[in-house]
Length: 359
Ligand SMILES: NC(=O)c1ccc[n+]([C@@H]2O[C@H](COP(=O)([O-])OP(=O)(O)OC[C@H]3O[C@@H](n4cnc5c(N)ncnc54)[C@H](O)[C@@H]3O)[C@@H](O)[C@H]2O)c1
Image (cartoon, rainbow, N blue to C red; front, side, top):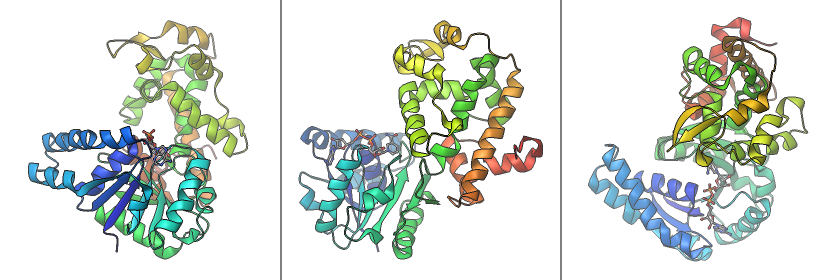
């Protein structure tokens, strides 16, 4: 039974996970190696909880209780006694492994979870003497708003540990867990790669035209180009590069020249004022001429044809994920729907549009 939760790392994800656990009624200890990060935690929590109250998700009393349920732990040793430790330290294998060596000794009874997005859970778990109690709990940003949690089975994760983590996510935190094998990109970062890569291969159809087709034909809240601008072209490219390497450099995941060039030019998206679109005071003002110039005169296809190509590639990746035994059909659809706020998942699209099936 999980009652006491510990979170390692008080950054974007750690603070959000701590808030989610606290407002779900758990007592939470949070450790960060950087004193300033721990010092900023109460302010972050207050701001997050106040937003929850303003949105009507929490009462003032619930927010107050949640605020006091979180305790800062200046040393890692203070986390001993936790039933579950969720590690949300920087995405660095060496650092995470060092943490798991220490957590393994400090918390001999706890379930140890990593929030890694792109590292191998097995490689992190090996650092613990008992890797049966290690798994991935991949939350999405921001954890209080995003319902999806990818629960990642390492090769040695025990069924009991997985079941306890599942129950914690589902019942304790009221999230929607999905069951995924420890493979590069898990479900979402892998199945959604074609959204970004195939759209760039079809960029001659026009950024705005493709985005509009994604919204109109796919019901997507954001088209691929506007979404990459929001995420940051550099952040998005780093995920592509990591997946490309981890999967053995398959052609379909090759990082696109267009995006690489834009990143080199500092055209990083919304945060830089220019990406696929140009922005003034945070608002898009049309396609970025420098990005358009890089597209050149590619094969002219309609936005509808571009969109159908993107969806076909997305379905093909989803089919591969299923065939490789990474996750089941229902979990793939659920993960894509919840992570992207799409009305449907790839297998539902396939069922409705058999002509989009690339296989
Ligand atoms: N940001 C996202 O959108 C997102 C989404 C899902 C998963 N993730 C994953 O979550 C993890 C954390 O990401 P983030 O965006 O919160 O990073 P972040 O940089 O905002 O926070 C990391 C925190 O860890 C602290 N830290 C550094 N070394 C430490 C150590 N040795 N022990 C304890 N704390 C230490 C830092 O001071 C910092 O406060 C990464 O593995 C990342 O891949 C991030």
